Image (cartoon, rainbow, N blue to C red; front, side, top):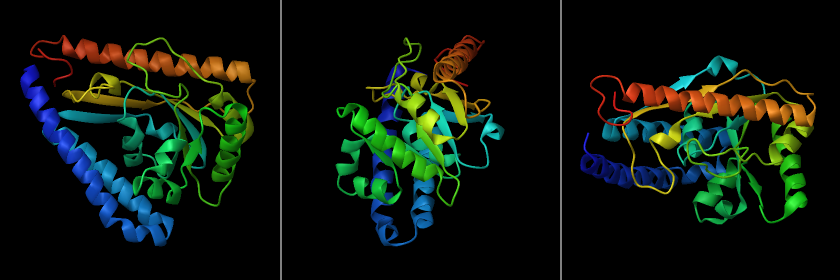
Length: 257
């Protein structure tokens, strides 16, 4: 597929993607005063319809692997962060996710209202240990609540290009040590097909792999080393797998299948 055609499809998708978001936010306004499960249904609808648009317009499919590794009760999902894709797509597969996100996003009109209603957890990156303590306390309450939730955190804090040197922050360690819940590492290759700081959406298959959960109770240093090794090994393997597919006969463009 030519770069010009990929660009044209990407522009069409981006326009419909944000239109889809706006329509869902407007239609979901009554959910702000209704029980939370109503809003959760709208969020899941938005995630799944966005993935459908991505597949139909850009030829970008999704493969979810290892979903059997997600515990039935509350847990932490520590996910590799390569693009904006995983900030919404996990709603399509997790039962009741709750994200940790930048505090500033919760101030955005309309969008921010929904983040509050959904119970998402803000973190002020400039507030140091005080912010970490507040985030952990809120996360503990969410995990210990009456319904099982999957607390999604990006251990590196910000998007990193595929193959970039890992930079894991202490927040995940602090959270794991205090939450008393299993932590499910998740590797992915989304940055190959939804690059950060780019309008391009490339054809191929985004793969997300949920790995064996890490039980609570490990030493902090041991936990971080195991978590980083597990996520990085899986993500590197998925990047290599996508590269090998690209080299198969008949695949002249990245990720086309």
